[in-house]
Length: 402
Image (cartoon, rainbow, N blue to C red):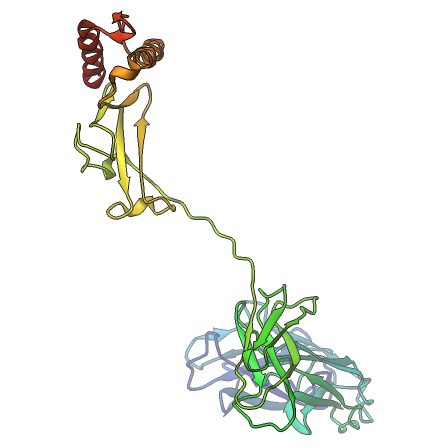
């Protein structure tokens, strides 16, 4: 409304914006208004005039009015009554006789690279305000806060404000300025702003300027191979969520200088690798595996245990740094055993072979796989033929046990 402070006996202009409301598509809008809780206009009310996307109506507030109310309709049965509450306003009986005071306390603060928040202190007798940016009026707010969006990064703007009422406008406030910061830099980007290209310079150094993403909290380094020198660009600290600015005066050599800027940053993450016995079906029982070994034999109890071979070439889920790997798997009460059988019996160390086999038998018996009882059939420090046969039989039993 204009003026926003309604005065009894004076003209009042009502502006209705139907966007997003029940009359948004109406080709005609009426205002049905009253005062002091009654005294409504005859239905459907007075026709409003369209102005752009808004509807406007001007009338004189009755001299004895202390409150006014209004609703809107499309002359076809559709109403907008503010959710059932109507639009209600108090009416002043003390008419304004002078222009408003000059607004004070004007501030302008950039909240990001494209938005500036402007605010000021209420002025006496003000019905609304006129806000100017760089001497061009940009808004007529009725309150004392305005968000100026869509600004250009790294740009300085000047603001001033005037108060308005039915008598006239106040003088403009003292101007204030605000500068938008640079646009946000991606976390791991390093930007060179100066030089913008490949200039020719006559001095023996050049001050490079740019920006770095917030990840580079350890600063940056630079290298100029042509001049055989390098240096460090320190991190400034503070809140650098949108990145930070840097500069470096770098010595130059005669001829072409290719200056390199780089930085390191921490990168944390988790890689999860899954595996399953179902992934392995290409390692047959008894097949060879590795020089100096015999066949691999898989033994298991029930169907809840087994063995697997992993090869990075054809098993992508073993991509954890190892070229190949093998293991046992068991589920519930199942148990798995893998044996490597080969030429374990040699003339020179028959006794050692016997002891190793005896220890293995004991471990297997304690694990519930057995009974296994290798015999000590030695003769002159060597296994007898019968012992050899017994041990081979034991090994075969282990290979086939389940």
